[in-house]
Length: 82
Image (cartoon, rainbow, N blue to C red):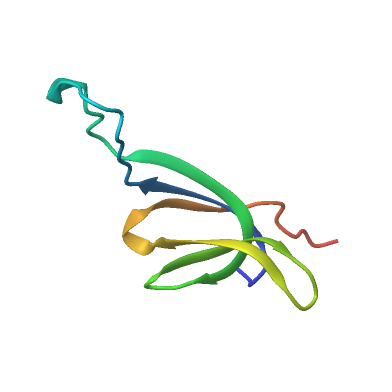
């Protein structure tokens, strides 16, 4: 995938909470599955960085996801020949 291609990244995330007193049985004991859509900046053995907005010279907002957390990366709107 080329840099700045539009992508959808599906990944797992940690979470926590502080909702006051409760029983241990009420704890949510599984990772959350998250989807992020944006422009691919970098995808390598370390992880993936996706940018939310970009101009010719600047970016606005980004997400980095470690490689171990990534479930899938999908190219959106692939270029077609013709």
